[in-house]
Image (cartoon, rainbow, N blue to C red; front, side):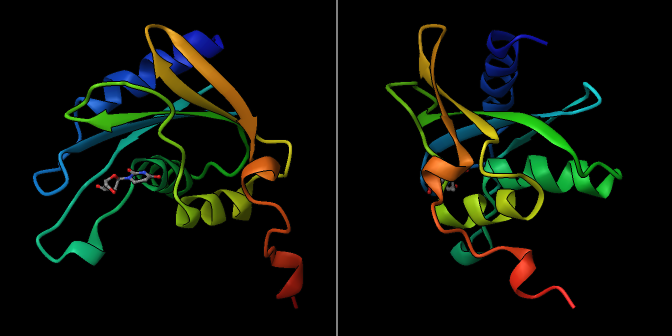
Length: 136
Ligand code: THU
């Protein structure tokens, strides 16, 4: 699975978004260390706060299947599903990533036209609140 292929999987997942309220379609593709890909889309709700982002959909799908070791995630999104630049993960999704992934976890932000920007969880969530603070 190349980075380009993971980005393409995120773009494909974006087409499944249920976003009747914001009109923002978002897709994520999460690669496990064992080589599997779990995809997710954003799923909105009339009770807005219950909306779930694409990244968390993908992560929760993977964790609920027994996966906990992740190699990389790609995220694609835009208004009306049009990719006009990076659609970076929200703070809640960054925190969920921090539960399972280290600071060097690569995050690919699809920018459109087959291109992406690469960053890391540590760059997007410095000084993360991590489980060592609450571990017994
Ligand atoms: N959204 C995501 O899916 N991922 C993010 O990290 C940011 C926001 C979704 C939630 C909502 O359906 C729409 O984008 C607008 O906020």
